[in-house]
Length: 399
Image (cartoon, rainbow, N blue to C red; front, side, top):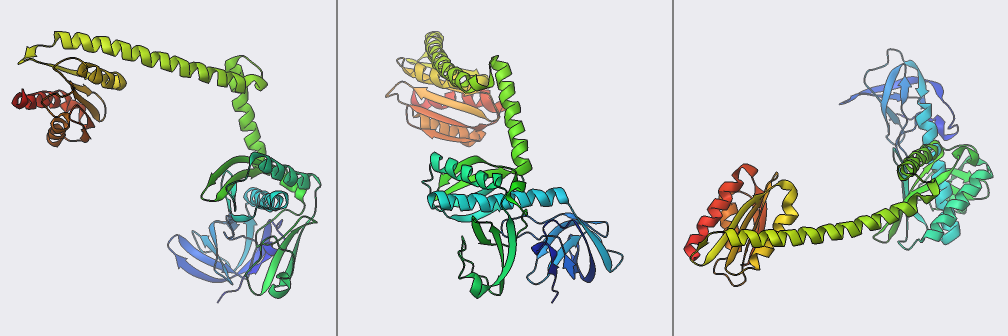
């Protein structure tokens, strides 16, 4: 069994290191290289692993196998003595996010008594899940402000090791069930946690914590946040978006929310007016179509195909035709797939649901409804005219 000395445990700022290859095993992605010592952090505890190079060969994954750490490479290093280089931009980003998570989790517990039950560090943002779905806006803001206050104070972040029996007697934010030697991460006077991840040495290096999104479900509150350089990038993106909105509205940044709300209300009102006009127009058009449809055995059948953008109008017209006496509407709407609306005057002899079922059985698609109104879809646009003609032929037996 390979045992790897974990250099990142004591020095998260180590960017390069020398080591010796002690084993190489095949892997479907290349080879697994084991070293006597490494500064590469393997994915664990919600934190992704490091990238970089080993003897000039890109490291594509780092896997924690218990005592040993496997470095996944495309090719085997040519020498047993290798030089490793950490992708520092990725490493420092993870150090900022992970330390920020400790601060934010501790802040939620101190300010509101909410405990963190899980943590995930993503490519764009990180999340913590709190043990309640009743975390309010003021409580979220209080925790965010407290965490950032600790950043401003630039407190020391220390690493120490304790036997599990001794660690269990300490005031850990979250009890640990691990045995043996326990690695502790302490934010001076604020937080003490058992953690194997990489962290900055002083809280000021986190830069800033900004909560971006809050979701509540199934008894938990998920808080998405960004720290450090990520917070700066997000702030720039927000500013660019807000500035563009202000330019489009010809106003100052501070007026954008009010103008958006005003325009949204105007759009809703315009939409209601449009829908009413569409309905009125459809009613008139339906009346005209019914009046001009040939009468056969006391029944008028309106058959028509609409363009894809007229789906809402077609449905309104189907109902409007059905308001007339002794009327049936067989309407189709182009699209991929096409849509069908069948209706008849209340109490008519035919069953629109049956007519639709037989039509879709022949031309594809599915749908359903009542004797007086049925709706379906899924047929080919090219078959739309034939489908309506077939549906009308089914009415001959009930006229």
